[in-house]
Image (cartoon, rainbow, N blue to C red):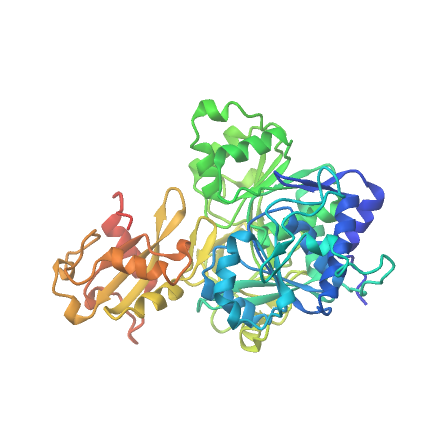
Length: 563
């Protein structure tokens, strides 16, 4: 039997050791460890009393807020499985995850109520399984006994009613189920190279082991105050959040619905933040604030900074180190499936710029394998297989992709990489042509599939092009059907235009995408070409890497038209 503790155990321990210490807060409210522990138990009882059984999946769809923290702990305490959903997804994408995970309940923020209602009749979730987060916190600050607000909402059960309504609260002595570390704590949906989301099965044991490895390698303690900016539906914030829960530190949740650079600086300064994890886009927007604005804020307590999820340029890293004079900069590489794999440490940021570092405390030796499963020599490219003690337990109801992800104890998510003579890992291909825009993963095949459904599109390929703010943006190269290809857009020398044909233009195709995809996945640029301009293999497959090089040779140094 595995005797590792869960986050539920950790919160209960810290409620006894540091009862009045602030465990978590956002801009609206805060929880001491005592309150956090009590509310987690209340919520665990309430969810089970709605008819849920241990092992059932509970989906959560919301922007960052304090409630995420008590929901994660309550689900662990009740033996329920969290299914965090990216709030940027479109309705059909949300529907797919809810159906694939066989979610028995859904907790959602009010901003997404209409989206859920639009697909509600296609779900098998019972009426009492739809829980709506209240706009105003009802029972956390300043008093736990304040009457709950907004507890009645048509066809939805109010989140705060779960704490205040006697129907859902079991007697205090009622026993909660025994939850062991081997049990599943979450299904983390991550898109595969086909673009279809896959549910990565994460256990309580894996979550605890990655938390302990993170604290060990980065030197975190109970005295830290961590700011979680990345969405709490993402592995990044979940893994770091678990770390600080186990330590009994203080977690600050950035609950701004959209990123605001100056607000972030204010929080870093006024709340004594010692650590935060951001994507390059966040750092860029923060450092582009006027110098007099940046000078207003004292960020001297920020001792550790994490930059991840996308490549960062040298000038950005130097600017970060210059502004955060007491901060040590780290860069992590990993995945939802494998967890953290490599770390680029503070003294390596410039001398190994572009590398994702070397194996860290929680990782075994990385293997780079060729297509026949043989290890490649240093300098050669191979598929990256990692070995971690906290690797995922496979994909939900997907034996084929689970088998393809593993070679014995080693796990791959499809990244190609090389190792240099010093043992540093350099990623060569981002998950088979994946685009990373503002820290979000975008798979070209998903965008291509939507564009190809348009009656005027004969063929299409999607690549990422560099962007100073977002890292990369989506660029679609489109071949129109013959009857549409009579305008100037069919000219052999055609590059990027605003108006491409009397029959169809780029804005029309972007609108088509926006009606079917999340906004961040939609093309920012459309380029119309002839079929023979698309680079292909001997078997007719489009060569995305060559296409990207060709696109960049035509747009390098230009300000691209956004459509």
